[in-house]
Image (tube, rainbow, N blue to C red; front, side, top):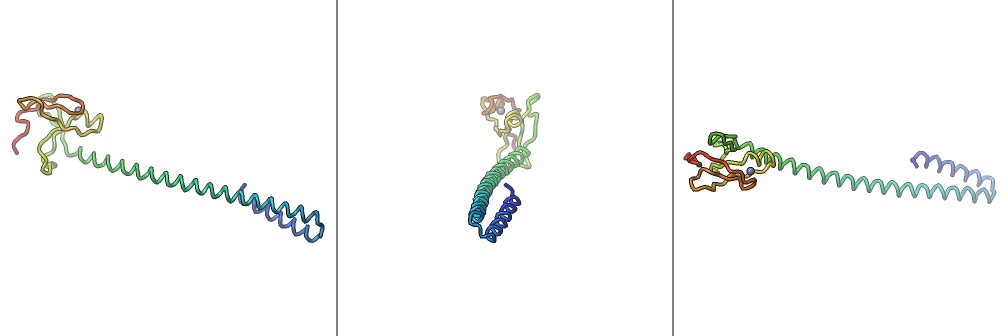
Length: 158
Ligand SMILES: [Zn+2]
């Protein structure tokens, strides 16, 4: 029931009550009193319903805010990951073998290293290639196990 309908009902109930009181007819006064009680019960029910809606609305807002914070965290993590990935260049260290090598300007004291391009592109995972062979030319991605031949010396002297 909308608030205008409740207001109209109450106004009508009060008007009927006044009329009944003026007539001094006990039956009409009783009927008008009962009608007012019914109208007041409707108001009470409406107030409770509005409180419930308000509570549901507050809960929905809290859920939405929590979801927004969760998404903002995800965006921050993705931005951080993208910033980190932007520190690497796709290089052909060995003819026909492509890896992501850290840019010299972005090393920040880290040793020269390569990332697996497939893991970055397909899984958004930063997987640092690890040397597996004695001659320091074969590196393996610890995530997808793909092997990459790197040009010796694998770590150029800088
Ligand atoms: Zn990989």
